[in-house]
Length: 187
Image 1 (spheres, rainbow, N blue to C red):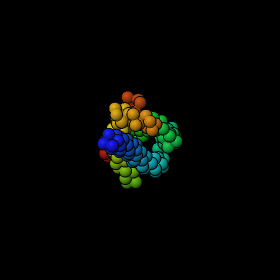
Image 2: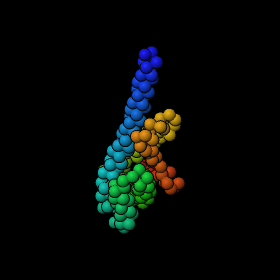
Image 3: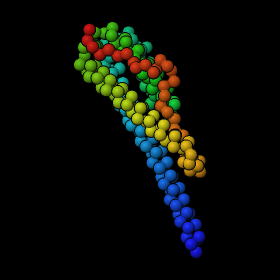
Image 4: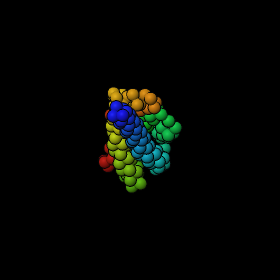
């Protein structure tokens, strides 16, 4: 009888451990999803600012149609990307287009002095900072989650319940790793 109680106790402990490990993995997976949602919110904010910035610049930049179109096209591509990898690539292209756009803006002192344009630039800068912070927080969560599903003994539970690794939000082009050079000062 005592052996049966000990065996029953061991089984109960194993079940409690399995449930705890499973719940831990679910919690981590949800934290990764939440961190991605935070990036998505900031990217949407960025995407919403860009048309206003381009529209404000159009009146001043009559001869820069190609530059304005490249920003608009990069924005559309970024908004249409689905996977983390595709989003990272498209957002890198958008950052490059915005950077080129801001370099062209330097040739238009009246535009640089426009209060609406200055306000939009400030919003964009703030949003870029929030995106960078959100990317870092997301990648931290992905690291913790991926470690958990790869390390023993939680890897057993992860494998049994088909927990999949998450992708990091990484920029593929080394040039994209550099922050866009944007000068908001009036010259």
